[in-house]
Length: 138
Image 1 (cartoon, rainbow, N blue to C red):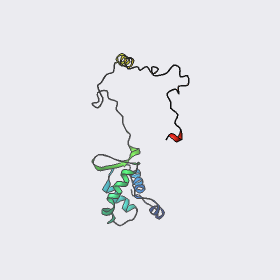
Image 2 (tube, one colour):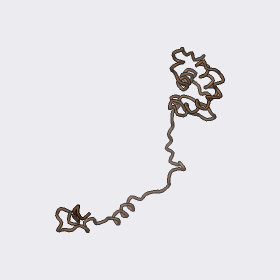
Image 3 (cartoon, one colour):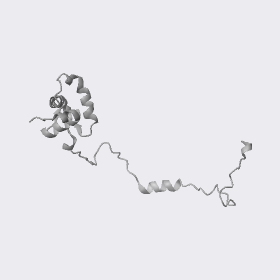
C-alpha cells in the first residue's frame, strides 16, 4: 500500500501534508526517518535530500498541530490519540495545605480598614484637599 500523488499534488503539497496523508493511510505510528523516506518517495524527490532535509522535516512536524511525537521517536497523527486527565487525590504535586474558613474570616475582620477616618465631614464634594495651580505658577 503506497501513497500515490498526482503531479499537481506533488507541486502543491508540503512535506507535512504528505506525511499527514501517509500516516492517515497506513494508520500506524512511524519513526521520523521512515516517514521522511516515504515522503521523499511519494513526492518523487532525490534520495540525497534525506540527509539535507531531515532536520527541517522534524521541525515541521514539531510545529504542525496535526502530529504528535510519541515515545522512542515515533510520530503519529494527534487525532489518533486522546489525552487522559487524571485527577488523583494522592498526586504529589498538590499542596497538602488545608484552609480553615472561620480562621480566614477572623483574619479578614482584624485587617479591616476604616476608610472614612481621613474624610473631612465639612467637605461635601470630596474636593476639599485639592490645590488649584495657575499655569503662571508652573
